[in-house]
Image (cartoon, rainbow, N blue to C red; front, side):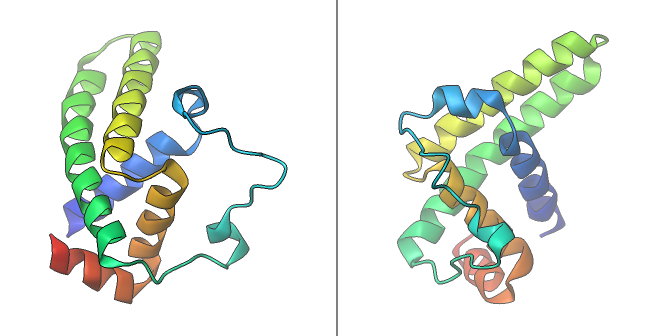
Length: 128
């Protein structure tokens, strides 16, 4: 469970502000009308089993990417190369999430709910 929490935190950190996400996204988001439900305190926490299964599937792929790229990033001696590797990891994580059938905001919302809502955490853990 600690590994999942660490993975979720790292995954969210990598996905949170990456400009690659904006470039990778095939859907355009109207930024003027978009609000972050987690920060507004109105986050949806009643996810159905299909959404949670997609999250678990995505998380599995993200764990693999995280492990692979953390080793690469830790062994590089250049800040520039580390940033380049982080962007590559970001791109791969976006692909894994989308291939699992989720969009980035939904994945991040479920990850946030996992960390803050015991009911969501218990349901996700049961699906693992």
